[in-house]
Each structure stands twice: as structure tokens, then as C-alpha cells.
Image (tube, rainbow, N blue to C red; front, top):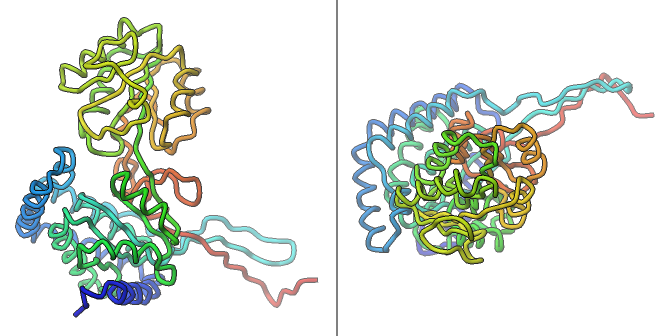
Length: 418
């Protein structure tokens, strides 16, 4: 039984077990990992009533804490969302195993044959807040990539995450893989987070999933490398060449489908030539849907935008709106205020689209498509462990392939260097 009072000792024990499990997973067969994930999906569905009941306890806790509607939506599980968790587990299971894949192969005049092949990172630490489905997504992707994972869910999702984690362990057991491959920190004590950030002997990378406070803390304090995005300040630029029907459909979905996710639109940029027409129509449509439009000069809105509205992540039924002179004006605004997560252009002019794609350096750029597609599952990854906005190693949705590194396999035949 782990001592939940002695956090340093608890985390050291979890780290040691994860490191030992990672050594076994590095050469686990693709079939074993696939079978573990399929068995875990079956277990989640068989235990859905218990998972939803556990989630009810978390929802009560969230209400007592005064969580926003958007945060409560992130937290909530019903049978449909549990079914989605099962689908994600099966989707990851069905993907090709990335471990051992040959990325490049060549021969040298010296007689050496060289291959660069994918290899697991080792141990991944995932720190997340209210979304209990991250337990399954992170566990599945890390396992698929041959990594052990240490999961530290938020206090809000404590019971839901525990119920889902038990199903993942059941899958590991059924496939004959080490149960320590997917461990969950069994305490709400925040000291466990501080420990994880400095566990350089045991953890190879940290992935934070949550709000600005959590991600900022991790990026400031971690001694372990981090894959993360701080905010999803997502812009949608409406070019003068935009098709009005496409613009309305995309903007409404990008803002209102789910306001609490990182791919939700937060700022609308309107070409000056269409501000009085399509721009005004979009603002009014958003307001009619219940969105508070913080409008810049020349656009109808709920209230007048201030400097604080540019570069703001609302995660709610709010959006900033501004007129820009042209695509270059949009690019300038995005360069100044973007969090380098996701940006979109609505346009029929190929030259405007090419300029937008060429000159903006966010992790994800979209054309005539809702920014709510900024998601690993929608990118064909089965699920994602997070979105990375840095430029080292992983960028954009982090799936199983992004949770690997590589090594060089060099073969000779008694070959010596002159």
C-alpha cells in the first residue's frame, strides 16, 4: 500500500515502477499493445455505469467549487461520451505500431548500412485538469508508443479518472503487460505535481493538459522537458473573397460548438471591404446565438472591444471582432497576439490563402474549415495527448508517433575507419 502522506516517497516509488515497466514496453509486441487497448475499451464499456456514477461525484465536487459551465462541460461524462472513450481506445489500438518503424535508411561508401528507427521516449508524465477522457487518451497513446505513463488528473476528475484507469489496468493485465505501464497518482495533493516536475531520473517528458495557470506553472517550474501549449488564442480571418455561406457555417461552428476547448475561435478578423456586409452579418449571427461580441470600431457588437480583448482566451460564449485592412493586416494582428496554436482563413482567393499559410507560424493553419478540428482524433491519430506549440520535437496534436524518439542502427561487416 502506497503511503499517501509521504509524497516524495510515493512519487519516487511510482517513478521507479514506471521506469521498470518502460524497459519491458520498449520491446513489447504490437499485438500485445493492441490487445491491451482493445481489452481496456471493452472494460470501459462494461463498467460504464460505475464510471458515470463516479463522474456524478466529480460533478458534485465541481459544482461545490463553482466551476464555470464550460469547465463543467469538460468534466461531464454520459453514455455517449463513454462510448467516445471506447472508440478512441479502439482507434489507437488499430493504428500501425510506431515503434521500430524505419524513418530513413542508407548505405555509406565506408561499407556501413545505417537505419534511423522510431524508439519510445521512456516515461511520460501527464498532468491534466478536468477532462477525465484524458486518462484514456494519454494512457492509450503512451502505451501504443511503448512508453510507461504517470497520470496526475485534476482534483475535479479524481473519481472519474480512477474508474477509467482501473479499466486500463484491466486491459494491461489481460494482455500480459506490466500493470505499472499506466499508473495514476492516487492523491489530490498538489505536492505530487511539484514532485513530478523535478523527477528527471524517472520521467522523460511532461505533458500538461489544462488552463493557463497549470500550463504556466509547469513551463516555469519543470526540470523535465515539456510538450505543451499555454493558451489557445485562435483567430479566424474572413477575407474579402470569402464565400458568405461557408463563412457563416465555419465561424458559428468554430465559436459555438464547444466553447471550452482549446480549438474554439476567440478572435474574428474581418477584411475592411466586407465589414459593412458579411462582417456585420457574422457579428449579428453570433449575438443571436448568445455570443457576446467584443467588437472593434465599425462592427456591431455586444460591447466595445478594449485592448484586453486582443490576445484573450475566453473559453466561453465570447469572441473579439476587429476590422483589418487586408490579409497582411490579419497576419500582423495574429503575429502580435497569437499563442501559435491554430489560425484559420476563410477565403476563395488562392493567393490570399497561400500568403496566410506562408507567413503565419502557428502549429495548425486551416482554410475554410472550423478550428474545432484542431484535435488529434480529427487528424487521424485516434486521440491526442495534447497540442504542442513549441518547435522542438513535437508540434501540433501529439499522437503516438510524436511520443517516440529515434535511434540509429549501424551495421558493418568487420568495417573499420581509416
